[in-house]
Amino acid sequence: MPQIIEVCPLSELPPGEMRLVEWEDLEIGVFNCAGTVYAIEDRCSHDDGPLVEGGLDQETCTVECPRHGSRFDLRTGKPLTLPAYVPVDTFPVLIEDLTIKLEVE
Amino acid sequence: MAVPETRALTENEQLAHINADYTERYGFHDAENYLYKAPKGLNREIVEKISEFKSEPEWMRAFRLKALDHFLARPQPTWGSPMMAEVDYDDIHYFVRASERAERSWDDVPEDVKKTFDRLGIPEAERKFLSGVGAQYESEVVYHQVHKDLEAQGVIFTDMDTALREHEDIVREYFATIIPANDNKLAALNSAVWSGGSFVYVPPGVTIEMPLQAYFRINTESMGQFERTLIIADEGSHVHYVEGCTAPTYSKSSLHSAVVELIAKPGARIRYTTVQNWSTNVFNLVTKRAVAYEDATVEWVDCNLGSKLTMKFPSVYLMGERAHGEILSIAFAGKGQHQDAGGKIIHAAPNTTSNIFAKSISKDGGRGSYRGLLEVAKGAHGSKSKVVCDALLLDDHSRSDTYPTIRIGDDDVNVGHEATVSRVGEDQLFYLMSHGIPEEEASKLIVNGFIEPITKELPMEYAVEMNRLIELQMEGSIG
Image (cartoon, rainbow over all chains, first blue to last red; front, side, top):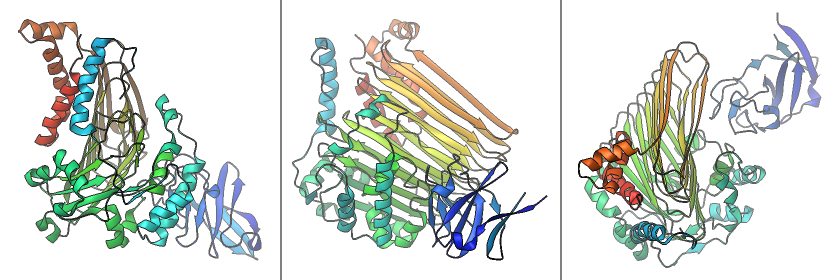
């Protein structure tokens, strides 16, 4: 059953910023990429690297895993470079009352 | 390689014999008559200078500097060979320029450099059996040529620096997508200071009948060579690329750290053959990785004879259905050498197939290691793989290790793994000697028989050279 969880006010996550959200046993990275907010599983599918600690590239809307450099598309969760080859989960983002919310299951 | 004075005279003589031949054939060095030679050590200034020398676009300069940060932030790997602790990054020249540009006419190559490659037989090989050839001396490629009919079909075979200038869009699309700068410490180092290497693009449906060859030569003492190779075989195309490498024998160590990325699009086939014969003062720490899409095939044929330490595990990611990957590896570890070689195959799509055949020979206290990974992802049903690694020990003070890793994420797969370690047996020797074959000759026959399944995959000229190199290594092994 999907649930909606609150992350933070939009003003606390300006463009170029990212933060970690924990929900049950999930760790989710929330990224503001040039004004659009995306959420993906915070675990590189190659070696479990923490993606929110990597580099966010707003131009290409990607994040680079700090462990071995795989780049993930924040819109789809797909890796654009090896060594990761399996996509990570993505989560729908809602902006309501200037607050960032995620749909999780 | 210097021979310790404490060794017995007979062994000295035997080893001197091997080294004498290497020195004569490959171990010579030229006078240094360079346009530029960076001081030893690595810092931001050196990286910026390399980029400036090459008049690179801003994105590549930024890529290099970011890679330098990754390199400096990462610790030296502690897994693998203990010899890794001996690599001194501050005692290396990171960039040496010998020539203004990569010439297309042999006559225009600087005289000294031309003499070196003449002596190594490169122009002769080009005339005889190659579709194209590149020759890299120190940091940069000094000569590059490809047959005109291939150019007319749209084949691009050039050095990486020229490719960045003349085919920037295609380089930018694929560069570092297979091996990111932050993949590992050595890939980060290469990404920061890369220079030279080959760029190959084969258009859809084009088959290159004869191999393309690159020859890499280090001349300077304490030199670092960091070539970067990118091969893209478009749909249904075929290419065989061969590389060879040698260096002079110095008392101080040199470092060779290449990054090689291969992309085989649907239905394409790439074979990449290496005959590595660096002198025994070279650390050879290389990252090689390939991706094979639907119905594509990638084959690594990897022969490691030289170097002090080689750590090299070519990999194939099978990303499309029915893709095939093959790794054939020979490693010969003589006195003072550690060949840490092997390969990795990742089955990421259904009905993919692969083989890894690795053979190592250790002698005079040398150490041969097989290190491999076979991974079958969840959903890659119907995949088949066979891994066979065999080690041959020629005496009781040499060493062989096997480090296989197998990860299976799907139920419907067929995976086999076999490993053997054997000594050249008294009974085999006795049998051959009873037929009148001298002991040394009998030993060579056994070794040649051991590696024959792989040498038969080499082009004829390389198979002959491989057998000759193995014989050289074998000389004096009985006694």
